Amino acid sequence: MRRVSWFNVTSLTFGLAFLYLPMVVLVVYSFNANKLVTVWAGFSTKWYGELFRNEAFLDAAWVTLRVAVVSSTLATVLGTAAAYVLVRGGRFFGRTLFSGMLYAPLVMPDVILGLSLLLLFIAIGLDRGMITIILAHTTFSMAYVAVVVTSRLVAFDHALEEAARDLGCNRWDAFRLVTLPIIAPAVVSGWLLSFTLSLDDLVIASFTSGPSSTTLPIKIFSAVRLGVSPEINALSAILIGIVTVGVITTSLMSKRAIAKRIRDENRAET
Amino acid sequence: MRRIALIALPYLWLLALFFVPFLIVLKISLSDTALAIPPYAPTLDLSEGWAGIRDWWSGLDFENYVFLTTDSLYWKAYLSSLKIAVISTAITLLVGYPIAYGMSRARDEWRPTLLMLVILPFWTSFLIRVYAWKAILAQEGFLNQVLIGLGVISEPLTILNTNTAVYIGIVYTYLPFMVLPLYAALEKLDDSLLEAAEDLGCTRMKAFWLITIPLSMQGIVAGSFLVFIPVMGEFVIPTLLGGSDTLMIGKVLWEEFFSNRDWPVASAVAIVLLAILIFPIVLFLKNEEKQWESDT
Image (cartoon, rainbow over all chains, first blue to last red):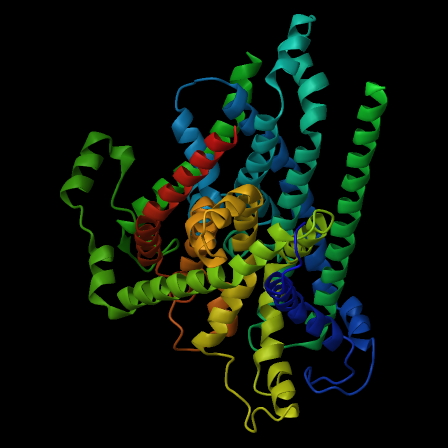
């Protein structure tokens, strides 16, 4: 009964065009043979070749990847624990301070977080390098994990955990056998979110990195500060490609998982 | 026992890496600038025990904060950040609302795809999305080439390195943060309310203002804060797209720290920014809590 409204179709078309056009332009320019990025001089993939011969970029990419894997894993463990404690833990001393500290990094400007962490590392004499970036990224990512996991914990039926405990599970077994499988999709998306945030972060990494641990965003930023560069266009196109494939794959997978669950539920009913 | 460990682990982590650093910033903002490594002279010396605290208390001055008020650069930067954040939040809301509305009214089978299309740019590097606009807005960039090619303009427009480019960059990168909470609010809207209003003689426009807008208010508030708060401290967008006259406090803090190496002043800038933001941050968290309660 819903009519197709031209207003809605137009606003969606323009909105999505606005969101995607800049990325499409970037990808197209990455295949431009000309060193002057915006003046088209024929199709070429030479900038991709240049990029892969650039040791500095490859090193930075490797540092970034390692930081992202470790920090998102730590953030997932800590963030899930924090969410569980806040939703199921009942009252404890300093609960308000805890939830305040947990969620504040979500909205705190990066420059403040970066500055405060750097001053801490200097105060305790910790040399800046990969470790300090990992500590910093874990701290702000765990807030995102906690938000995602909390919404899942709130939504599912507490009675399931109670039933497991009535049937003889201790708290830990109930968590491991009942709660964890149910919140698993949220835990996974929390990890993916932290991973992306870590890959993406420039400001906090700039404050907390040392001379030997330049991350990819720091490298990109110093390269594009003064102008556009064809190598960065190629790098951007690669990153956009990876994200697109990743997002589409995970959404297809979750669609399939939902379809399977509905099928199973129907089968259980008959 | 396990419960204590479960609470203690994230708790101690946050105390050590969020709360303590904040106290250190506060302490350094009250210290004196010095030509040393690290470049400040602490005024609080805890190793002397009570005497140290008493000395600190009697010698306590807010010279770095006083300095912020005497140099017009700082308050101009705060005001200009505030202005840019307010205007760009309003534009993002105006651009985002029709998109979120269109998504929530789309056919059911289309909605997951539309949602994915709005989320996808959010997963793509923020830095790269800002950088993309450099190639579009430049003097001989994509936009000028298209407009000249179409005969709309004869001289290229100067957009890059102006505040206009900063607004475009902010609206573009923060749009998903506005659209997603708006969509979440609009999706829950019961169509029968609008039908009832129309049956009772409301025009569609009036029904929109009297029903749709108030019922999506939580989404409007959440989206606006999610844009406003980070934009206030934004560093990347004004640096890459703005000009030398684009003044934003995030950029000032960065330069104070990395270029001038004046840590006490940089810390004072951070504390004042936080003091400005604490009110919107608390309002935002309250709004989220309310949404939480109405959802469960």
